[in-house]
Image (cartoon, rainbow, N blue to C red):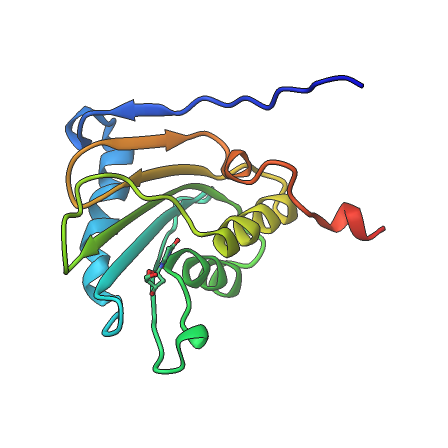
Length: 161
Ligand code: THU
């Protein structure tokens, strides 16, 4: 038996003021698109904005449904849009934020399990790690260099061979 340790690091910033211009722009756009979320059931508006490797910007928001499981998260909405409108173009960085209309929005939240799985598939498919910026509408910012770190021991297409 051997024990294997899985490790990753994240960068933590006190606020978006500490980010470089490109990252601050993406986060600011993500905060702005939260207004396009359709979240009448949770009142939790999520916004995601990504820069593709060709410089294009793509966004996504959560879109809920009276049949709750039919709703889609902002991250998967973005990934579907990117793959459909910019086929074959990898994502470099994605900023994800939220506006909790019932409470505070000042600490980062990270993607749900289904979105982690979808991010994992996307970056394997495009053979490029996606850099992730996480924050609320204000406050601390976390940056993770590889979305795969969010889903250690992921199930992938390799497992189906
Ligand atoms: N949500 C996202 O859009 N992304 C996540 O990673 C977490 C949750 C949405 C789903 C639902 O519309 C609302 O936030 C509350 O769960």
